Length: 110
Image (cartoon, rainbow, N blue to C red; front, side, top):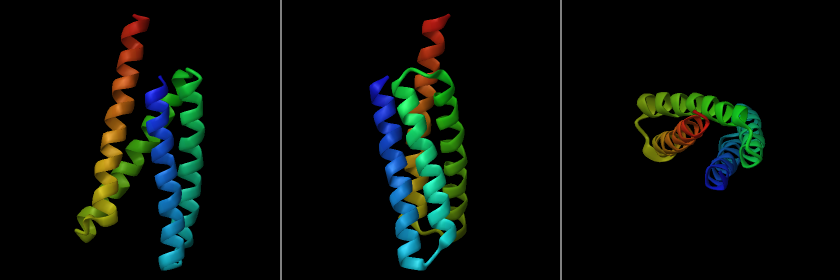
């Protein structure tokens, strides 16, 4: 349980930092707001995952799925690996970790 929470929390920090960097480099308020909203929500989900809340796992899965779709779209549009392609792959990895955690949790309950 702690490993998944740590991975989601680290991902949340990267999303937060990415939003801040996007704002500082490009002056993008949208990057700052999205980074703050998604980063804080993922950090709260990571905390709840560490406490054993099943709903938090699904919330983190949904948020990560949305972010993976966004970063994949941006990568397909720009074909720049950094940052969109890298974040797409990282989001996919986090998505897999969360999905496996949910699967293991459902097997234990059955």
